[in-house]
Picture 1 (cartoon, helix red, strand yellow):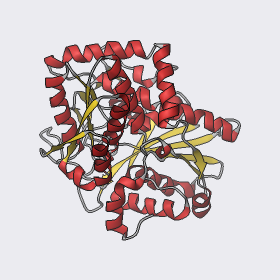
Picture 2 (cartoon, rainbow, N blue to C red):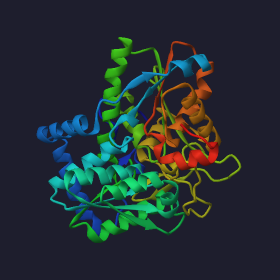
Picture 3 (cartoon, rainbow, N blue to C red):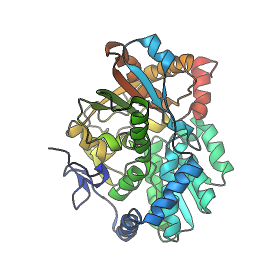
Length: 410
């Protein structure tokens, strides 16, 4: 199977919405077929509308704060030896994470569709926080569905969501984490789709939500492509783009412009949540060869038991604590364009500790998983190899977890 050239990956699906013939699709109830079809038609129209694109770009620059910085981590590079380590500091974006791109676009689409309400899911709280911010900005009433476990461990983002005027709907079912929040959010939308728009927080779900999110976060790689040329004059011979992967929105956004490059020049490395070392639970379906399953309206590799039931996951990172993954990442794995691995909770924590010791950077636990992989491989690579990590969120939301683990935090 070969990747098509010059066509964005979000569009490399067949007429039924499947990447590679088996990943993705739209497994939805009959009651949602018309709303999903309407949203699909509106999005395809808007993404070609010059006025809409200008509006998007205006808010990306003047509301979100694009472009975010690309910086060399000089001290960390010197400490480790080997490859140069750089960071795309997407956490500089308004609100502290990449989720603001998707939230902003969804609210702009909702306004065009004449909706007054918008709902969304969240795990780490960033997707919820950003959606609440964007909803307030564009005059929409907002509900955020969040698992009770995540509400307890991500208090700073919950406080911000409420401050922005949005309502948090606690989810008590299942593992009380992201997977259950997505399920409850979708159930709510089924009953309220006439007046309410739904924003899926990552590149998961029915085909159209994967595409909207990917189209939004692709801004990250557009900036990065320019910044690489600006910093190096020409593209280095060896670049490794390392990103954490939960649902996969920040990774797709980080890689989008580079997928058609030769993988010997630009390697794409996704790092999933391996969970605690002493636990058999994880959130790494790509790393551990999970089977194909249906979750939240799409076919992808899913953590599941021998009966095909969705497994509970475990990770210190709420944003990666999800049993499925984007169908686009499944496609990238099958075509061998991207390599996927995982980092344990302990490795992510030590990476956080090392990065904050040497650099003025405060990555959340999600990108700390990516930094763990960079720290692992950098010493055995040549000095002309460039590693770029997407530092896609800041650690303000994780302060209670970090304080509990380390006693004192940056």
